[in-house]
Structures are given as structure tokens and as C-alpha cells.
Amino acid sequence: MGRFHDKRFPGESDEYRAARDELLAAEIELRARIEEVAVLRRRLPYGGRLEQEYVFTQGVVDASGNETIRQTKFSELFRADKDDLIVYSFMYAPGSEKPCPMCTALLDGLNS
Image (tube, rainbow, N blue to C red):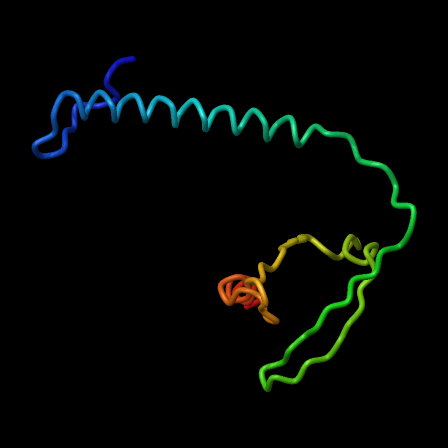
């Protein structure tokens, strides 16, 4: 393994530079493997057909805080006019009735 570049941090020791180069080589190798796995994932054939039509129940809260309940069939998630599907699992703290605020904030930003 050689050095990746000649830039050095101020006061950097040879031992530190060698460890950084080793880390960078491992990260490059990991990234290449992640890409290889992604190619394999995209090559997967379609899975089996669902035995039943699943229905999701969703609470939708408007800007005023009013909640309405909506049901969506699984098959409706894959209509021709739908380009993207994001699946996200909210995390709940033990004993909490509401999901993690970071989870909900993340998803709120996707629909803006």
C-alpha cells in the first residue's frame, strides 16, 4: 500500500500518516464492495406475488393539527403514476405514544 497523496496535516507523524493511508485503502475497498453488492441487488428477479391485498392505515395531520385516517392498499403504492416509494419505520422510545421527533422531521421534509 502506497501513499495516496503528498498532503500532510500539520505536525503529522509518519505513524499517523501510515494509519490514515491504511484506513483510506480499507474505505476504498469497502466502497467498491458496496457497489458490487448493489449491482447484485439490482439483478434480483421479482419476488413472489402477494397472497392477499394488504391495507395500511395512515393518520394524516394537517397544519392545524387535525388528524384524518386514510387507508391505502398495497397495490396502490405501485401505480403507473407513482415514480418513487419511500418506506420508513418510525422509532418509538419505550413507553412513548409518539414516534421519535427526528424521524417525523425527516419525513416531513420529503413532502415539501
